[in-house]
Length: 62
Image (cartoon, rainbow, N blue to C red; front, side, top):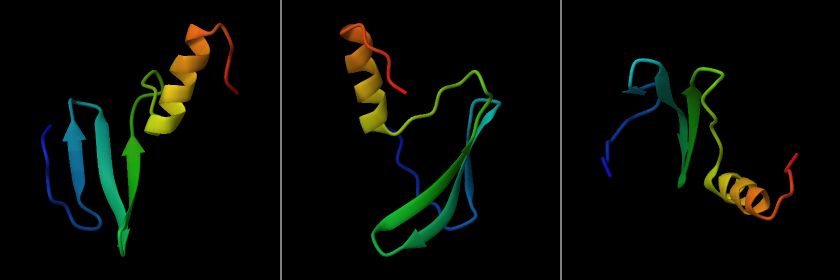
C-alpha cells in the first residue's frame, strides 16, 4: 500500500484518468472527490462487499 500525505485541494493521480482530490479535512474525517471514467466503478468498501456478496448469492443490489 502506498501511503501519501495530502492537504485540502491537493490531488493524487492514478494512471492517466483517475484523480482523487482531498476536498475537506474536518477533525478525524476526510472528504475526498474522485474523478474517473464512467466505465470505472467507484464504491465505498462496504457497498462493494455487499455487491459481491449479493452477486455470489444471485441477487442484484440497487
